Image (cartoon, rainbow, N blue to C red; front, side):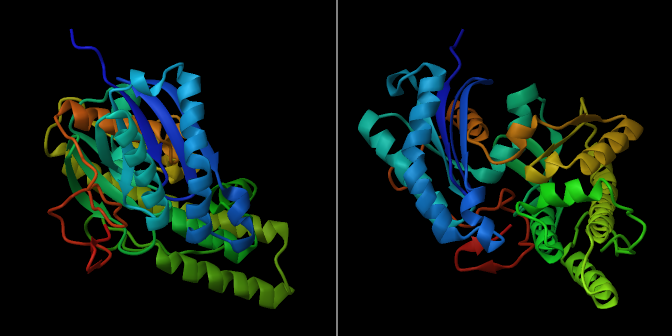
Length: 360
């Protein structure tokens, strides 16, 4: 019997510096160094600050992950690293760190698509059989993927503008709530009235699984300005009601579009139909509850990884690297950092395309 592969994973695509050691489907160690405090004063992630912090923390995270796992570099079978998409300074920091380790040890180097890491997380946590439907919903991405293999992804819908996580962050800034915006809006919404303000549900009157969230921000801005003009400012109750209405609108859109995506997925007659959700916004309780109810009504298994594996982490990168390495994939010192890297290479770009390729 072949022994399971053991890989070190490195993740630095945005504002979390992470390292992990995974053996097969067992997470031996997972370390994440966040940067929330560094960016708090700016209302969002500053790429230059993020890149500098990655440089300072990467080696420390790798050392801690190895110490927690009880292994040394000599005990590893390879090194997996996020090679994109993401903030290019951060991605480059991780790739260079991984290259240095690979050069020094002679270990195989595996470049991993950050989105593939999220999309394959259900395989790590629950060994879900292919094909399954993945709702990847995060700060920078939102798309429905039919996952048929470690490098076989079919996109059947996605956002044509802002991702939900981005919309949550921007809405928090509009309402004077702290960053990161998703948890702040969710916390405020718990005491709010979602029916006080009427927010649009973009693209629900159009067929298909594509989504749009930028118009919601405009509607929130106008509603906030009306309250400020009437009262001279926002009370905590106003913040709560605006947050609740905004969150309800995003949830309604995601649930209806997921219903349509499930119909397309089920046409393939999968043996064990499963909807999985991953990405930071998957931690939102209202969205999880809505998806759980939808799957129960449809007779489809619903899987949401543990919250620590929904947000950016290196365990998912190590596991994706394990699947790639088992299939014979290897990279060399020409591995480059990529700001853009769509999973479905045959799908038309949703957010435009430039010299560096499709954004998503």
